[in-house]
Image (cartoon, rainbow, N blue to C red; front, side, top):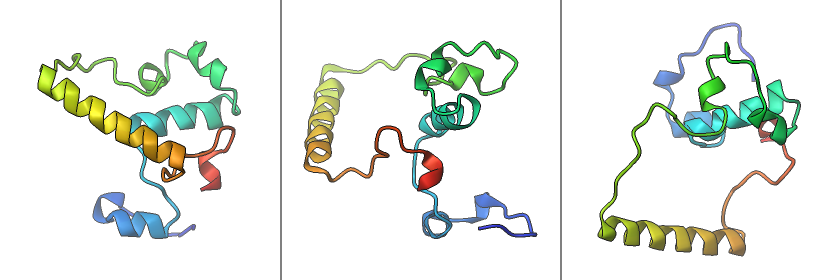
Length: 109
């Protein structure tokens, strides 16, 4: 959807974004997908070898925030996270996840 009037996405909710064709993804995933699809023309392995250190997204190209302190978790938190991961993996193998298929572009969504 194109418009002549700029839209401030801070005023839009999840339903508005979905109506415009956007899927909910994490910031790290969005940055990585941009790097793969736009900068590296779909070549995922090239993102790791990117030498464009002047790009503001370069530190985040692998999908994580290198400036963030490592998270420390208690044994209870680790057990809860492991259970969530197990449930998520079960859903993924059952086909419940809305993941982008391998080789598909985020712009196809």
